[in-house]
Image (cartoon, rainbow, N blue to C red; front, top):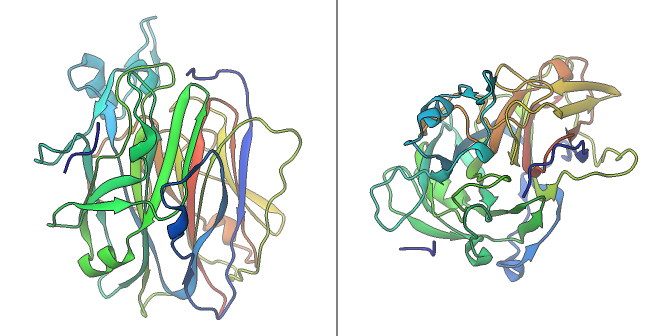
Length: 373
């Protein structure tokens, strides 16, 4: 089927979202029910709230990819697609950002009725059973063209080797016009599809993002978060939060939210994943921190500098993507190791994302942490 086809701020600004793990030891897996009566409705701001939580033997895996990139016909674009830097025209180089280019859809399928599509691999460990899966998608509706928001809550998804199925958002869609961009995120429960289809390459198409060129830039993509059970793996706290909030200036300190106990032993292992929009590589001022018992750790890795965590990457555990661009030009879906932060043990985690540069949006955060037995 066919679905109908700002300025980057350089002044300092600070935005924060704060989250804390919520899981009762000994509890069973729970997921927020679909909000059917709110499907198709939109809100400029969606406060972060728990979507799924569980205490079970298992973990969380993720698949993600971008839906738009720079046109391959541009000489500098090929370098950007490899994650390199491009000539600035002043004798030096600068990090590649989406506002530098005429942006066009990624389209990897052979279906003439889709104008964007990309693939990424879900890797559920052998013997694991999917307990929850949710697809997040979003991007910018206003670039060289203006996309109508009526299709924000509609997308196509195909399981490994399968045909496209229409998927509708099952809760309120975040949609806000700000800072020269027209940004949105939608999501839907896909547990049944992923449980029945298992591991492999999933294809997501027809994400309602705009192409072209503007100062705000074109960006968009999707992330599939999958929680699974496997008896042979450690007992873990699993949790997924989502919302939609621009990281705009606020006065004073924003308090961290602490919701419930999440007991984990000293030396525990854990991972945290983040989905965010409109992060530019090479513009420092972004950080993701986790606080445990008064100790704060800044998260990062080889692909995500500590002060530039929103840098257009899909990082974390390796899995196949088609295409596999190193620079996803405004779309971030990263997974970070929490080992150092958890070394003393504790009963509560609090995450904070701070941006001191251009407009950016936070969409989802998920955590898997070893539980105290």
